[in-house]
Image 1 (cartoon, rainbow, N blue to C red):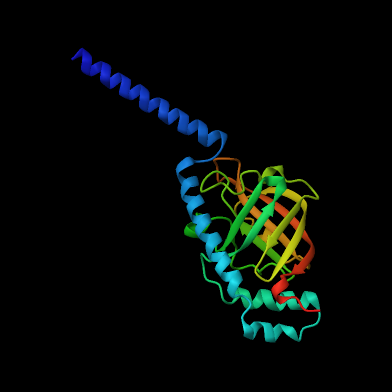
Image 2 (cartoon, rainbow, N blue to C red):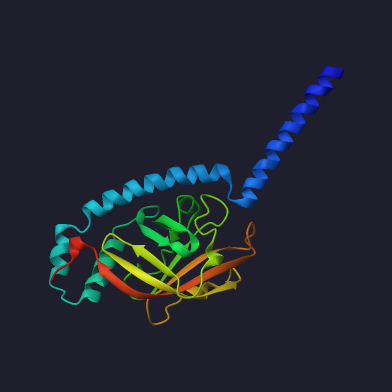
Length: 227
């Protein structure tokens, strides 16, 4: 009986230590199991994005935009054509921001399954390059925690969205903490703006942390660039 109690005690202590370590890892970094899952999903998304980049633009799209001489208008046309061909959960581009240690594949949609793959584009907002407000959401503590360090972004920090048709560069304007009901953060403001949104504070969904950034430049992908 004494031996059984000893074994049980050791087992409980061991289980407690494992749980303590897991909680510690989660608090200091991010939830381990969902991070592994997210890493696998990001790898799949990157493969899908590579395939998309190899097939876009199609010959028909190339012919349609070739006669558009203005670079900005050409990007708008390409963005709209690309937007019309993607489905929820599809990989659509790469989001990078050194200020928050971010380099991730963005997927279409902000439903649960899509956000488990990586940052998700709000489907009700335009695509990068269309000249309006682009909304992207991301987890902060689970599923790879792509927006873990969103609170470290400062005014002037660079954010880039590399799409199959163009790369759009943004500079941070400000950050804000708002209620989850504040849907107005993704409204059109008359120029191209990127809005990154995530939960705040850490380990809570009580509020939202928002990063606002304004587009400061865009370059066409070489495959669709014309002199």
